[in-house]
Length: 256
Ligand code: G
Ligand code: G
Ligand code: MN
Ligand code: NA
Image (cartoon, rainbow, N blue to C red):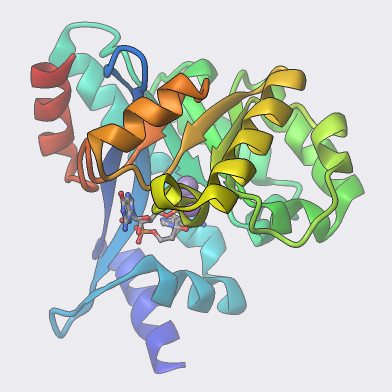
């Protein structure tokens, strides 16, 4: 719980930052969005991975203030990119919501407040959910997800294919995009089983009218293969690592 105490101080004291990783249209190579990823450098100067502190935040309930901070900060940054571009900078931003946040009725109000505070249209925001967020309490989550959609936001299912769930929710929920987990994408050129899984996800998405984003693209060959298979978007070190906001804007200016 000393990590918890330190995390609480970090949230209150402005020690968290967001990094932004581009999501590109595989056909044109253009950046269409950035995923906002929370970063924490502790008081002792250690940069912790979200894999280490997000679980702590979830167990302690600190994910609620942390998630609120991340949503507001991401919308502030998007508004700043627009201002620097003299109008719509042309990309949307994706923000992760944890299962615990989604189980709270107030989450749609929190998102609306963040959009309103920075004058951002809900269409510019994609909310990334995980399968676990839906399995926990499907009825309550269905209600919350509709409230989020009513704000105009888009919904993406993160790490698709790795969660413990049935597929019935895909039919019931207004999901716009499936993000194909990195574990299926990286190494798929040398693994027929991975190719089979990726193909199955792509055809499922197409049949259900959803778009697809492949995570973990590290090579041009992989990007070309995925584009040929009909995947819409890609994210990975081929395009860029997660970057601070000012560098993300510079990348956008030079890339698109
Ligand atoms: O930043 P990195 O690529 O290491 O992210 C590791 C994991 O942490 C990813 O699964 C990502 O979705 C998650 N993550 C990063 N930032 C946030 C956040 O602000 N909220 C939630 N809920 N998860 C996050
Ligand atoms: O769960 P989610 O996909 O949101 O997590 C994103 C995580 O994946 C971050 O930690 C990010 O740094 C990492 N990541 C993003 N692109 C790549 C990539 O091309 N290769 C690898 N190995 N990791 C990546
Ligand atoms: Mn994500
Ligand atoms: Na994620």
